[in-house]
Image 1: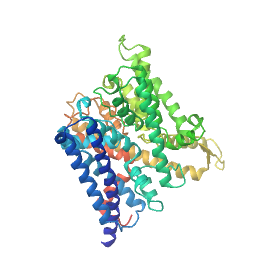
Image 2: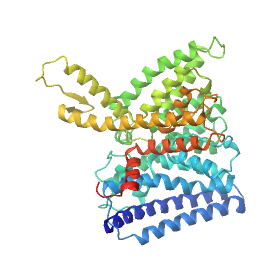
Image 3: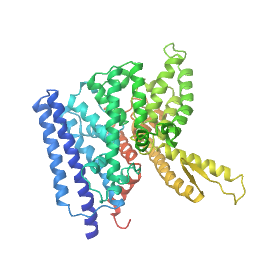
Image 4: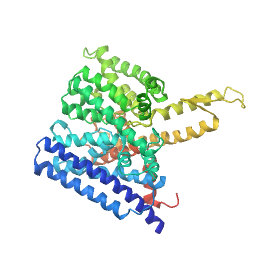
Length: 496
């Protein structure tokens, strides 16, 4: 019992640290409310009360359990899973208080925001207060890198259990020798890329407020917009051409960005995951464009140039897990939707802001299959090496790497299947949505993408909303921390 208490103290202490950061982020919204001249009773007071309450709760947790030991990996995983449930709950309060949304819709919106998904329960984002518009963008911007990563960069000192928490939030890459240096460099790179996005969007034709919000959600591969029809509102090829590279930059690992900024510019064309992104895009773009062009019934509005434009944008949006839309995908043929599903499932690079099972795991699975097939045609004693980037892997090392990657891929696909089955049962046979469209919606939620066939809306059954919330949550954590939390709730921490 005493050991169990120690475990809980560690988790609550670190949860308190996260709530301190969340409270500060909420209070920063007062600047937006003041500049936008929004009402004291309607906006400023709710934000001040909510932010102060969250900050105070975090300070109390951190003070009461300040003597708790540093977390092991198991504690960090439970903390990460719990954080990504608790933070959206507090973050939902402004939606309830200021915009009058229901608690479940507000929680859905907050979960979609923090996980960088972009599915929304708000039909008209343009009618929101500026404070809530920015809150949605801020959640996706911070959530893209990770709220735990932000906490580590501000509150944690070197020599603590920082790596356990860092790894628990589905991150392992090191830009610098220490984790603290790594997360701080990550934020500097993130700030630079965000500034670049604001500049590109502004000269592309967006107003300053639009450029700021869309740059934050583009580089965070989140997909929330402050317009009613996503990027389709602008009907601008120039804006689309500005957004595409920002989505791609968000899906590229921060380690690659760091090395490019240090002078290795050609790394964008040499890195394993960057090359995999290009190859995957070409492979998927051909059938996607063909399906859209051949199955539109000769509609003159869908000539080859138009199809190429909209297919390429939606495919990049799917593969980077951003979720911006320039075309109504619910009108697209089923083969096109399933092609986008493949892109959403694969996702972006490990160590980026994108979701999905990640490009590197896909590359590892491909190389393992290729290695296994090749082995069948060679003598039993033949030595076959596999190159993964700059590394030359022998059989034992390849088997270890593949087993780790395959575990995530299998769990990811099982979760996707279960979510599809439950949502299809909830939606019902009488629904206008077919199984392929339901699968698309679940893949979009679990891949933290945000592309939608229209199924996600305030009228969706409450069980359907809960299913998508769980898929977003598990997808952001890459499944295992979620399972660890379930296990701890049933059996406790010991023994693990």
